[in-house]
Image (cartoon, rainbow, N blue to C red):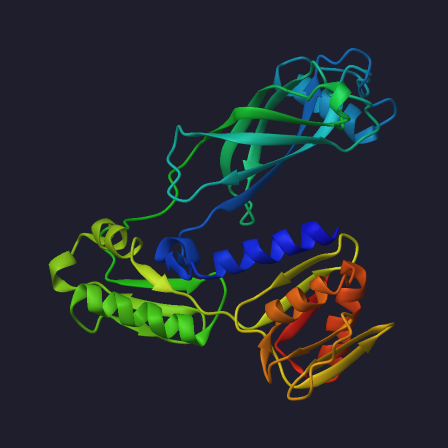
Length: 330
């Protein structure tokens, strides 16, 4: 466990040096997002593994047969049929005729969807409008892998029925939203965009929003403008934070987390952050007046502190007000 902790800390601090990130990786364009779709349907062709006693399944079979021109007296029942709920994600700028993946979930007491076929099912968005229609053979993973056989997928199983998104290239105002809101990062994004475009076109509105006005040279060329700025490198900034997982003993240290002068005693361990004489006892170590959490963790690791004890010590340091940053326990 000790060796694993040392390796993790070294790896983390080597990654911290890579602060710059492409704008496309830290921000999204307002309005350019996926939309969730949902639908109710039935899967047929099962080998006796469908719903046994389901009123809505029987009604669905009767309604389907009625639409196909076959009148049924009463309600049809079959264990070869299962009622299912469909979910899918409609990508931005989807066009009619494009295909998307569909996930099928049994909502009755069917034991398996293996070998079944989904009957044509409309998929609706939150506005209750139909955006796609799904149909096809349900694919269930290998039973040896321990997957739920009441959940299946149909790759490219739905066809989009309408175009999504209006005219984009002619837009004159774009709004960028940071994935992790931060005032410093927002200001830097606006600054680097203005430098790259050689003018005052980007403005940071708050910690997560940057408005971009299309320059005259890019009038009617919104796609080219965004393609240009999304590759710009930005030095991101984040709030100092330590994340610990008590179950696995994992400690993730964010950049800038520091520890003020403090003395720590834990069991037979004694460690002091601040001025003072360095003791000769190998279980006692002094550190300089202010250290990063990474240096503190490294020192405690050299003293043989277990990950569990390390997490307890970090929590106590935070409680004492000496850890300059947030600590999050998973």
